[in-house]
Length: 153
Length: 286
Image (cartoon, rainbow over all chains, first blue to last red; front, side, top):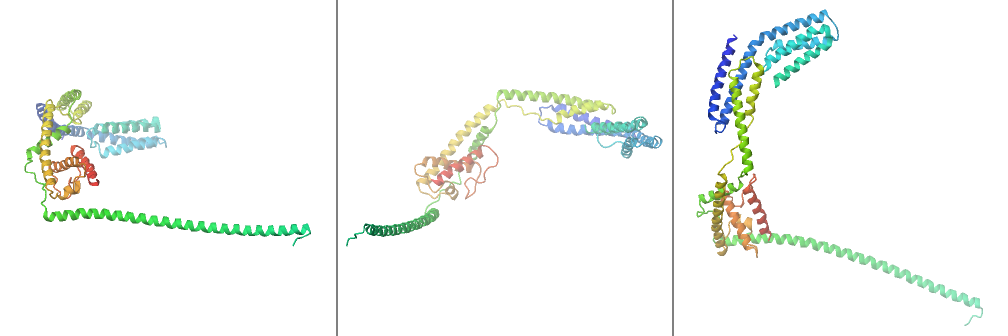
């Protein structure tokens, strides 16, 4: 299963190399350079998406596992160290865990790893909750901010 | 009879004086009333006169309007009468002005409109092109790297991807034309010669039509009036030549509207169009 995205990425990289040869042969001054550039740009996008697929294939299971772990830990923390103020961070972490469980890798090209970061931050927040109470919510928020920044940039 | 009593005599005098005063007062009253009446009648007369003047004014305005209508009617009538028996001038077909001549004129106008590079601009453009080419090479190298990167080296992927995108958003500037200047100069002088030639031909035909009292086409008369205004014949001929040349250059064939639809974009044609509109309005008014 993991071999297929790898093969596809290799294919795409090969195609990009071919397109680049044509682009280099034409040179920036030639009249068909803009057309070739647009074509190459498409190839580059295809390579980026192939790489995302590889990442997605690699990170789907870990992301889901961490999300499930976060959810379970959140329940344990809520029951074991119950506190009104701690509920904030636990509920936020639970929301992140639910989002990652449903869609572990997202759709954007940089999203799989950004989601890993976000869910790890949520897990850390849950584990910190007995010590830091509601302040651990900051860790969740930091994880979400990191995810948004890395995804959109 | 004499009054012996001085008091009585004085009384009589006072009595007379009183009577005199009364009659004087009466006369004064009378005079006042008369004056008031006179003033009233004068005011009335003045008002009447004002009304009359206003009426006359209106009448004059009406008359001016009807004179204007009559004038236009006369022009149209004149035209109809002449159309019956006079020959018509043909300003619509110009076999003697051939396509290559028109093409030369248009090429000359284009050359005038074209922006010429100053040496500094040419230098800047060349520098921009060199920058672009360098950026393109760097971007191609970055894309080359994308073909060999392992999939989990994310920061490298990001860096190279960004580098690649520096080129896709940019446009390579057009190279400055080295001998464009000389070519433009040649086109300009050829265009000027062609304009002079075409103008000569058109002017000859218009002068001929004027000399033989031919009936002008409707668009011509709409634009330039029924004849040259007195004392301005030469200017009028010049403008008329320009109008005909404009129709020829820009393929205007409308039988009523001499210049056709006004051009939307700025440029030589728009300038000429606006100039002709203004000049012809002057000739029609004169």
